[in-house]
Amino acid sequence: MKLLDARGLECPLPVVKTKELLKENQEVKVLVDNEIAIENLTKFARVRQYQIQTGKQESDYFAIISTGKIEGDIIENKVTGNIIVFSSHVMGSNAELGAILMKSFIFALTKQDQLPSEMIFYNEGVKLTTTKGDILNDLKYLESQGVEIVSCGTCLDFFKRKEMLAVGSVTNMYDIVERMEKAKKIIKP
Amino acid sequence: MKDKLYCKSGGCSAKLGAKKLSHILEKIDKYPSDQLLVGFDSHDDGAVYQINEHQAIVSTLDFFPPMVEDPYLFGQIAATNALSDIYAMGGTPLTALNIVCFNDHDDLNILGKIIEGGNDKLKEAHVTLAGGHSIRDESTKYGLSVTGMVDPHRILSNKDVQENDVLILTKKLGVGLTLNAARLNDASKDMLDEVYQSMTLLNKYAYDLLKKYRIHALTDVTGFGLLVHLDEMLNHQKSAVIDKNKIPYFKDCPYYVNEFYLTGAAQQNRHAVEDKVYFDKENFILEEILYDPQTSGGLLASVQEEDVDMIIEDFKKKGYQCYIIGKVIKKDQFDIYVR
Image (tube, rainbow over all chains, first blue to last red):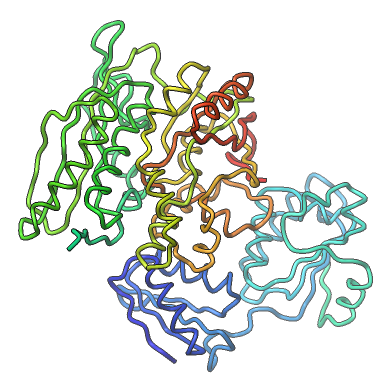
């Protein structure tokens, strides 16, 4: 692993220097002295689809960025191989209560150590991926953590919500069937 | 040998973050004045103090470390930027005082060129340089305090937007990104020429065209980037929809974003408003451009819908840039929608 001491450097230099080093090194550990630099490194890793682990080291911060798999057991796999399916935008039969429950269900998901690998939305479930608000923000967060989010295209068309899809991608029933068959476990709230 | 300034992270991107700042300012117990029409609390572009029924003083101050190596150009940019706040308040600038920090081990001719650049812009704006204050400092900083007059009934606040107003912007975005690219020797000469020209274009010209029309709110876009300035303008009373296809930016900015020439200030700007901004689709490049800190950016105006065609026509006739970027809507869940 290549070490880059970028303390004392102002943005964008920590990222730019990391970018240069990653051309010749698979993995770079960067030391920086401010949180903004860590955030910019995180954005960089996300956009380039590199792996990143960040942390604090005394009064400084570090990031380990890797173009391949990170060596050793620094990052354990956060996703479980489970799939959660959403056939409705509410949880249970009472719609008013169900909306509240769904919101806390998805929020609680974001707090889990282990996340589902995929979340599939069909029928009225697609309202969750097409309505702005806290739920959508939580879904976006889950997606950023590696959870794949897909919504049924027929359903989006049916509810005239195709243009409004704000997280994840569109899929079809063949794909949904395949995904369900491959799943370790299917969870339905 | 050409005189060169040493640039680290200059211009308006050197501003302290908006969030941190308001935390401190809230605690300051100010001597109250009924004549102070616009002050601290409003986060407006300048302060306005009423003298009589028809006259008020508008004052502002702006200074920063160099963001370009050419001292004369730096002086021009600093003055253009400092004057801008007066126009954004609807005022006429009259006098200016220099603010100078300079290392006296450096060649004084450099300072001479900075001040000359500043003064040339003041002259262009018909503003008199009336004095200044200089101190020894390790690193160079320059700016001006500008005093102007405004009719108290015609102050242009930065936050009286009305529903259905059209939002227009008079300069392209991406100054911070381009200056970063320049510092890393990765900006083309064409790009730099265009950006330097933009930074030294007085907002006076845009203001003179706009003032004939029904402008409900006006501000200049600087270090906080378009989104933070726009959010201040909306003042939690209204929301805005920005058309993602109509954001004007210097053409190489997408490349700069992809190369991660991102300023720390842009990230602070993101922190300040990201909860209030809704992007219909993840668009990393556009987000970075909208959060990019501008040095001597353009005016952002919220104008009466019916006046827009004439405004655009006027700008076109005079050869100045003017872009419709969105409109003001009723307050919705998010302050700003980018779609």
